[in-house]
Picture 1: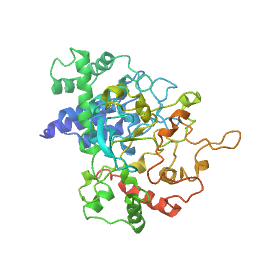
Picture 2: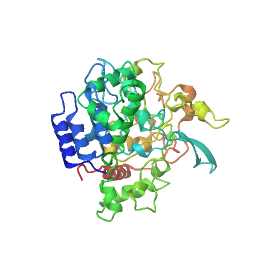
Picture 3: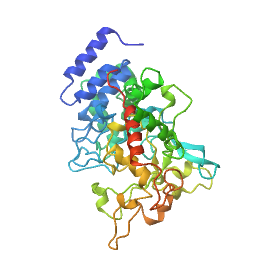
Picture 4: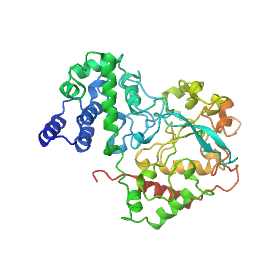
Length: 410
């Protein structure tokens, strides 16, 4: 049930006056979208810059509503976010949070191998790029305690800030007068509130022009229509192999543009990321997920997913540059072109050694480079062969992807 006009006014006044430590842009989104008290509480927590150590970083700092709830907190390094401690940086590009609520819990599903036709157990779901959080609640707690993000020393430290802050009464209203008595339980309540906010319509509006086309209220341009056909064509883009949608459906929620599985793309190494200054440092993605072996089917080779990262939704993709897990692709067109020409023209994307040999898949140790997907279209090409997509077709797919941007305020 929606709150009363008086309560909504009080919340809007709080969001407007806010307090110096709140992110005003995200608070405006909260005021527009949150209706239930727990959602309003989550919106305030999401925007609260006092919840980092030192103060200055909120969830909204790296999940900007203007960028489909992605971003890097004004970092000098486009690919990774700046944390609260001076000079601290993440190691991966922050994922966007729009439509994240649709991800199932991490587990193994049956998926047909495009090359062999066999059904195989495939990892899927979870939150973060390696699925290490089971759900939005667990995801919300991670950055608060991460030493290179919000850097709080303990759950109790976070709870104490909220307890002494301006919306402690709302916390008590939502969870009871004794909510702060047990810091661990109170922390869990905080993450529940953030997750409730992240499940509101503002994170899943289905308001893009693509959605309007599905509803029969808009039309693609000829280039966009061509791009959509190429996107679906199993011999051209073959994008539906991972960025899933139900071709027969006109229901927007059937088009999430991800199957939530994991894939190893062999992204070029991004030397701008500070952690990559160590040539022996590699981000191995899914295979380093805690507890993976215990969750995997019998005889599953954990090392076979070293270098694999979760397939992101392509909704709002035009807002979330740079691209891939390490931000190595600067533009959306670059990302599409990389998929098409990675194997036909590797010299375009990878460095050469002293002898002039292209160092393909240079962001993985040599022993894991065999994990990279080289079988499915459009990766099934060799140097010198014609790419599956021409420059004109790459432009068309890029134009189509730009129709997936949600219209804000509609």
